[in-house]
Image (cartoon, rainbow, N blue to C red; front, side, top):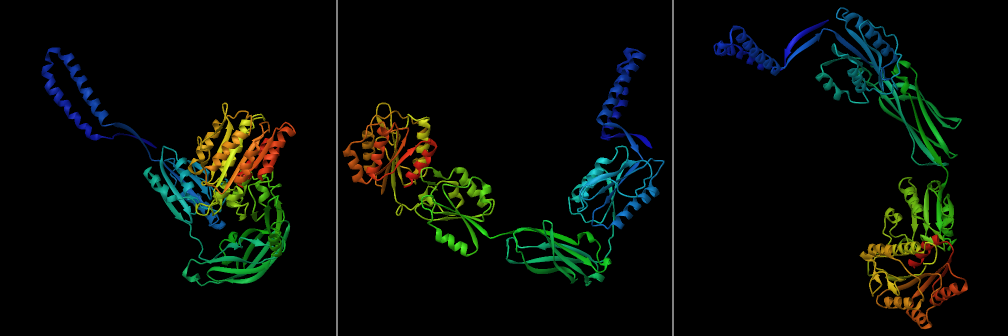
Amino acid sequence: MLNWEIGFDSPWYLLLLLLVPLIWLFSFKSLAGLGRLRRFLALAFRTAIVVLMALCLAEIQLQQTSDKVTVIYVLDQSESIPAGKRQMMLDYVTEDVAAHRDMEREDRAGVIVFGREATIEIPPFDDDIAVSQVESNFGATDATNLEAALKLAQASFPEDSAKRIVVVTDGNENLGNSTSIAPLLAEQGIGIDVVPVRLSTKAEIDVEKVALPNDIRHGQPIEARVVVNNYTDSEENKNRVVKGKLTIKRKSGKFEQLLAEQQVELQPGKNVFPFRHTIDEPAFYTYEADFTPNDAQDDLMPQNNKATSFTYVRGKGRVLLIEDSESKGEFDYLVSRLQANEIEVVTQDTGELFSSLADLQAYDCVILANVPRSSGDTASFSDEQIEMLVRNTQQMGAGLVMLGGPNSFGAGGWANTELEKAMPVDFQIKNTKIQAVGALVLLMHASEMAQGNYWQKRVAYESIKVLGPMDYAGLIHWGPGADEWLWGGNVGLIRVGTQKNTMLSRLNRMTPGDMPQFDPAMRMALAGFGRVNASVKQMIIISDGDPSPPSGATMGQYKAAGIMISTVAIGTHGPAGSTPLQNIATATGGKYYVVTNPKALPRIFVREARK
């Protein structure tokens, strides 16, 4: 039934209506000259204006009120309430609606059921309802989400009636927070009534978990534990002991094995039952513990009398040992000692490196056995492979061991890589009193090969990157009509230190020409070497061999100064080009490389630069 009422939000403005008599009092005589009819119309118009202004300021409202009441029953259908109690809740709704719904007012009633989620079982309508069973799908029943049910009820109310929610629950809310939404419902004029579901005070049994060790290997004796809770919630049952049968099974694929079956007595509170056994085969296993009480009345909810756990049993520990392709067998003794301790070892040399993270996941640990980043003419760890090693350790939990030696850590070209960041030590010696200082000169003449300038920049970049802060570096190339240093002015060789970024940026501006002869450039480098105090001095030449060979006097000075020259021949024009380069390397104790693929250049230069 609907009623209409007039209301005001600001009724104090109605005092302005007191101005109406004053308007008539003071205006009646002043408007006498208008005649009787016109004077009356003028006063009526002024009065209407004042009245309308007063009503507007008072915010007059025409309100519609309804005597209807809409009640939505919110029913907890989670597993914490026995099935019999849940059926009683449905019967309660049917009886309550029939007893209290006013047909003349056209009251409405609806039903919402909830567990982990909430759904409308019966939308609000103006007739009696009969709920014999729940037919809607409200998700899993392993949780009680009262908050979701209240929000759904709030959205389901019609606007033309008073609103009320009746919650029927045991109060064991374990998902959401209904106390946060209840004040909001009250602010909207929605009343909430709660009908508690009282549960039995009998004991409740809960198989909480099957606890297994984290790391299990086949043949290793392990102890698993089954945790069973015996809950009591009344004074008379606080010492109740529940007897029953505990069964423990293990499954792997289609095979199932009974591990234990025994009669046990559950004391009030937590009960822990350990059992030792051995797993002989590596596989994925499922453990299942099940408790069956001798008296069914001792357990309120049999649904939680079972617990499962999973584990993967690994075989022998597997280690991937990566060794230098040029020093195979150096760590055979270490391999034999690991194998003697039941650890499987797979040896891999740097010429056959892993290509994906999946290749590493088959191993528990990776050992870098005195391995340089670059080995031989072409073998090298790429940035992607280094990233795989780091991720395999940090994200997959595998071990990573780096054995020291002349080809390891900073000496092996691992400085300033992601691997150094992942290891607990610095790869470079920062104490200047014990650090060996090196000096490196790069002589670039490769402009005739395909993309020559690009590859010269790449090899220079990789070479400088592996140098330490105390080392010296210089680069000579053929400029406009003469040999010149790329940085350092006439000094040429400068300490890397804080200048490394400057050197690397200068490489982008390098545009070398076709060098006519080696001797002037090599004498420039010799003078640069003489100006620095370094314990190790080395020169690397990349060329097609076309420039005229250096003089015997120049080569003699290099040998006398102990400066080693390594040469890289690329795009040579037969013996006329390759022979001079080979002679330079041989005369100074350096190494001669012949490269047919320019992609190998950075690896060669890194290897030579770290010597």
